[in-house]
Length: 172
Image 1 (spheres, rainbow, N blue to C red):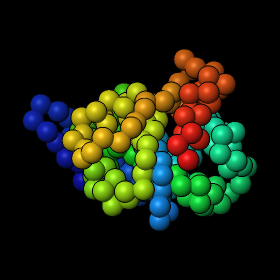
Image 2: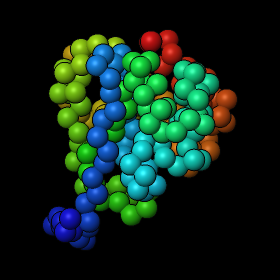
Image 3: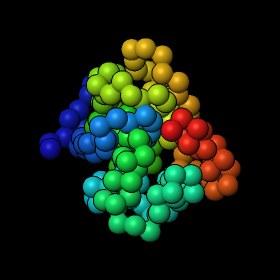
């Protein structure tokens, strides 16, 4: 796609994110900010092997991290978990959230309306949380900003991340 420009901003190449992963009756929606470069190339959520998302899903939800992606995805959906990102497209070099420019958001409100079975929204990291707070969503679903599973988040140990992420299992 050709680059776009905003007044006062250099031209950028807009990159599109991934479609949502959902079953028929999701109970939990996990929202990230925007997929990293490797995830986009592989067309897989949390495709970077250093990202701890799948290890946490293994520990908390019995979704074995060693399974092929399509099988892991199917198990998440069977357990009532949907995956998506706040940002539909943006300009970004590399994979770091602090490099996101000119975000365009997914219609999270329409998604939640389409799936009234959703009881909780888990936000994967502070960037997802910050963008989520900018959205005008109908209703008042509980949500929580959880520690990012990104390898860039070294503030928390794996055990601390898994402990905070355990809230997801409580809503299933």
